[in-house]
Image (cartoon, rainbow, N blue to C red):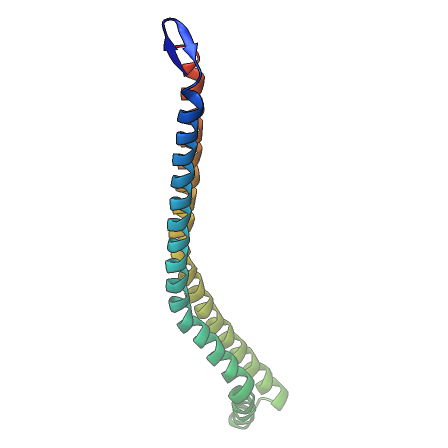
Length: 151
């Protein structure tokens, strides 16, 4: 709103308001496009970093399902024959050691997957900053419009 000879004229406000809203809309669309490009790049990078940990998980699972039962049986028999342990005691010891190894492999794979998702932190950070910027722009335009009523 502008003042002319002590009188307020309102004919300029709709044009100015439309221009400001148009500018804001254009800025928001550009910001959205940039945000989508960023999440796309971060997602690709996260997927590339996740390939090795996923491969490790598949490998460890394959080993557990395929080769480990045979190796564990053989180790149990060897342990029982080499010591005075019974087959059951030797089997329990071998099973416990195998379980610990499986947990260690899974923890290594989990850590790798967590590191791969850290790449998305950049997108989260930028999105948070963009939302704060939009709030600031909207609140500052509201404050300016409210202040212009008193000019």
